[in-house]
Amino acid sequence: MATSGRKTPDPGGTDRLSSLPDAILSSILSLLPVREAVRTSVLSKRWRHVWCHTCDLLLDAPNLLPPHLCFPDSKLYNLFRDQRDRLILQLSRRFRSAARTLLAHHQAQKLGTFRLHFPLGRGQSRLLDSWLEHAISREVEILDLNFNKGRPIIPLDFAQPYNFPFHLLLSSPSGANSLKRVFLEFSIWNPRPEEFEGFARLQVLELRRVNITERHVKDLLAYCPVLERLVLAKCGDFVGLVVSSDSLKFLYLEEWESLESVELSGANLSTFEYRGRQVWFSFDKVPRLQRLFLFEDSVHLVAYALNRLPIDAPQIKTLIMCVSSPREIARIEPSLPVNPPIFAGLSQLIINIPSHGDLLWIAWLLKASPLLQKLELHMAFHSNNMPHHQDVNRFRMVKELHECPHQHLEIVQLSGFTGSNFQLDIAKYILNIAVNLKLIMIDPRARQYVSGGKLMDVEGFYEGNMADNWTEKIRPLVHQQLSGEVYSNAELIIL
Image (cartoon, rainbow, N blue to C red; front, side):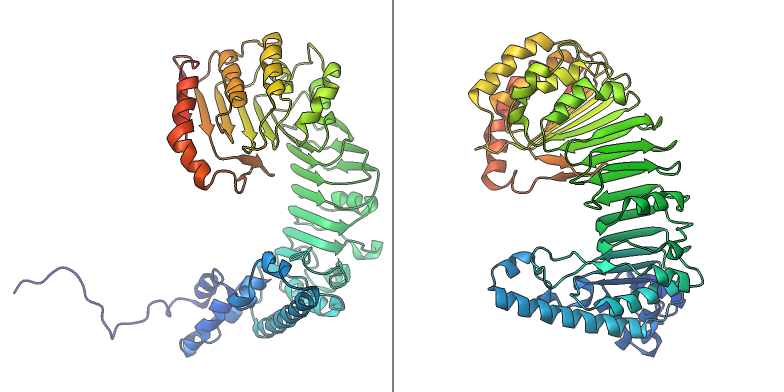
């Protein structure tokens, strides 16, 4: 009798997975949540201690707490204050107990990643020091500490910033030399001079809500010879910041309330991103700066971009701007130059506009960028947040004054497109000046630039009835309006 070629499982066959070396099994288990990895210890005697040798320790709520205790912040918001405080204390005790058990059984000699994301509360410094000592003694390469998780839900009298224990780095044979990446949030960075010897192999350092002084920033840059990426968000309280490093390639600064000036110096700095109030920038000593992101809650960003930026930073290739108050720009319009200085090498322009307002400045900016090759315009205009009639009329009136052909503009992306007359006017204006356009893409989903070259969708913008209305009514109308404006050699894509 003929038999099929399909093989049937052999119930008495060998367990090939268990025959793998411990190092491979540990690597596999490190991909699982800690709770699931620990459960493999009951499979057989062979598996009993495999999880103890995982090379990554991830201490956070999803890994250490039961699923029914890993709920969103919105649930805590709905509780009374005394109920919320009792629950937070309960979670903290459960978390500490689970973490102690995990560390007591952990036997790996080397650590790739040690991550602790949980607000443990006041009076836990010694416990945290012991956990961190465990990681440092095993030559951890990636250290990720975030004690800000859960705030502002977590009461202020419960949490306190963690004073990073630099003395532990000195007590370990490898010291800080094993560290390649450090992420620290809601902490204090205040080493004594004799405690800080630098980080010989550190490539990435991200500090958020960390108390740090100007001297410590200077020491960091001086004693981290291979540091390539530095993030300082809501750190410090000084007026002038000088960032000088020949190894640094990426710098991100965010919300320094007292900051008035930023001076950059470095042979290899290629990307600078800034979020905050208006400050004075010096780009003279960063010849390789190519990518610049500016986010200001101020109309002065537009004035600076059109009056000074082409002169201050002629070397940039990509400019990303987020203007959060475009409706206020009309009051500074008289100060905008009729013939703005030219961006000598700008090839890519990305603009975020989270609300409606006067967008005439975009015409000025395009005029200042004659070598532009790619334009991205990300809008987030909800139906009740559309430009007023006079804004539309002013765009139609002034665009004629600044209409000039763009010979190099080849790709245009417009997101957050709802099909309003205002947006159609913008699209038609761009189509008229881009004489060598190859592609224009229209996307109804609103997107916004975050950091590090990443875009994220704006929640609640393109959902439900809005998506249905776009597909059935608006999309065909947009295609009808724009298809006649596109040059014959250009492709129009409407998502």
